[in-house]
Length: 439
Image 1: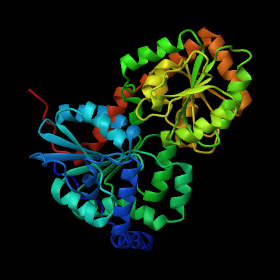
Image 2 (image 1 turned 120 degrees about the horizontal axis):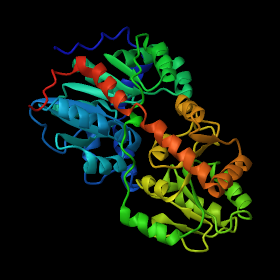
Image 3 (image 1 turned 180 degrees about the horizontal axis):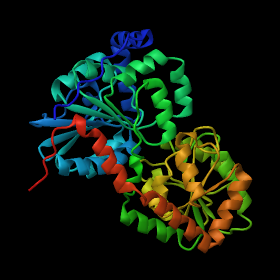
């Protein structure tokens, strides 16, 4: 089947015209930003030219499927999709682009033989054109909410069919795009196929795209569990011993204070309690160390190579790419970004690893997911630090309740995972060549 051409773009939005022209004029600033990110360790020194569109390797011969995501979460969600597509389309190769050092390391370990990873070009016309000139993808799949105007516009202008996969648009983002409806419509019109991860996201995207949005389900339900280093896990478990331990994962500013309040409330009823704090942005480690020690609490830091000591109150897990390690260490996991109005984070990662899950009320980024899990008894909702301390103590002291909640969370995350994959691939099939599976 011949892939459909991209949908013609309607009258150009002045805001996107300004963005694209401004991007071309601001290339020197883009270069300075890249250099600054290099100094901060946010870019790969050996591969930073890929961010300027300079390819790090040759293009594979033949049909090339390009899949673009932002970071670790999106990368993990597309691995099962790539694996299944690589078995169905054996004559195709895969180009995976992401924007973070951590996701690049993960892709290097887990991509199949048919796939290569490159850093995504910065959204600047010269970089994007250089990238597209070299790779010449036959089709592009953008994951979740990667709405880069230059990258999308340049790709669409070359007649390369595009799809939005596992689309997500939070209520906050929808509100912002609603003030620029023409620009939003232009961006979304470049996608021949739009797939949303749930009905709420579908409604928001459809209102801006003004076209049908399909809902095959959330690809993160089909993602493999977060990886871990088994030796590091054994060392941590030996260091913790029989102490009660819980994890506050992906925390944000203003939230750690509440977590420490909860810890202090629990100290009397849970002697030896160890609270593990894994901030969403590990670069905040120094800031958090100062906060923790200012309360007279004893702590160790993962980034310094420390394991928890017997008299530590807090273990600061301020490293990248080790969240799978800390979920396995802790029987109870609080998901951050939810006691402050950040919108929460993906609950399927701890669910797959057998954690009893606790969340705050601000989960609008994953509202339908949290609602469904809560209805199934797969997580607990808390509204403040007092609720948090009470919920953690209950789960730590009641292994039957904790294990049942973890079982329900795992069952919820497993349910329908194969169907999500199959329905996603079926929806993408019109953009792909005929499947050619091994004989």
